[in-house]
Image (cartoon, rainbow, N blue to C red):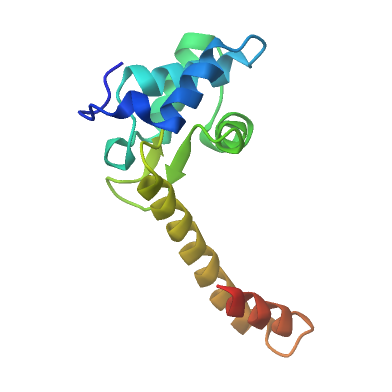
Length: 145
């Protein structure tokens, strides 16, 4: 595995979980291929993201599938996120993409970024929901963030 230059990659619980996922019988082949691809290409750690479209293209070529980005994110990346193996940065620009976390700081940055996006969407909805029953729900949710 090219570990993106991190000599401690194999000690990462996320990388260990990724290897276990590959070895566990019965996992969907497309998901296994994504994890294998990320490990083999050193997409471990927040500084080593890969564009989701590149992963989609690889999986389609390797597995004979015909995914587009949105169904791929829902059907392949979604379950891998819930398995705590892969995560994604949603920034626009060069840092956006998928990767296997190396450290808790990677996870914290992804969660923080996601919460900021949710907060911004709630602010956007607040104006739209003004004078409706949803206005207080949005205000309460914003208070939690």
